[in-house]
Length: 401
Ligand SMILES: *Cc1c(COP(=O)(O)O)cnc(C)c1O
Image (cartoon, rainbow, N blue to C red; front, top):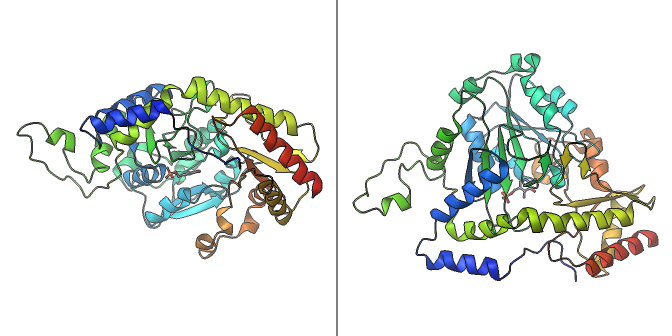
């Protein structure tokens, strides 16, 4: 069976994790610090805070901005549940909008959804393909849109407009105008979950790119404490002789990354551009070369103008089929020992959001994308022979249907 997305665990990873375990320091410490510095350099931002998941990172930032009951946060209907759940945890309302044919949030739909309650816009780079950040940045700075903004916290008053909080769970290393994602939105949050392009088993990182009058270094220091129960000294600082006394400055959260997991991330990041992304692009190109020439298929856009994907998910679409036919095709692919997936079941089709009144009929492009979509395996250790096996299995399943 060809798996869908196994992690790349080799001797290098095992050696670095073993070194972390043997170092005597297993929770947040020097390896997390080093990983943060490497990520900041990679993303070309001054400060990156590592946390234990993308979800925790996004929620931390919503709390930091003071999002609460009565507030609205605009999210795409086509995303993983985390994007909406973190908004609901704050007591705020996720306002779902439709997406484009390229799977990313529709900026005109975002504009129509803005109200005086809007506090945050959360674009998601689906499959690793960057959203239209020129349009999104222009939108939040549009004087007509800014006039509607009603700040109630100090951070909201300082920004003076809606926060652009990017769910970059798929898109580490994707490029926008030639630069790695990180400085293209106010806050960019990555995921290092086991199935993501770069993994630490579980983990996430927050790239800070707030405009003046914010000082990103100060915000970083504040968030570091906020992510550790609001405790003024972390465990490492407390190990210094006699340095035991601490204060708690606010009831914070507990979502710090550990050194054991940062060890995986350090190895993964060192080879990310030269090995991981190169191999993933080869696999994307092989799939597109095979499927683009047959009218049964719609291949995804993953490089266009100033936008280059991180090649996270290869979302193939089959032309002229129903959701049920898609499911049948998937079963025929599985029967040929190839694992495939769907990214994603739109939120308005899931019980938790249906119960809140969200209705898929309001998101026609989202439904069309979803109903014809099959995600193909993409990972570093997938061989050329296996890529061909995937292609053959998909062709056979589709032609038979
Ligand atoms: C995986 C994923 C997340 C959540 O990431 P975690 O690190 O598991 O919290 C959020 N958004 C999207 C689009 C994802 O695919």
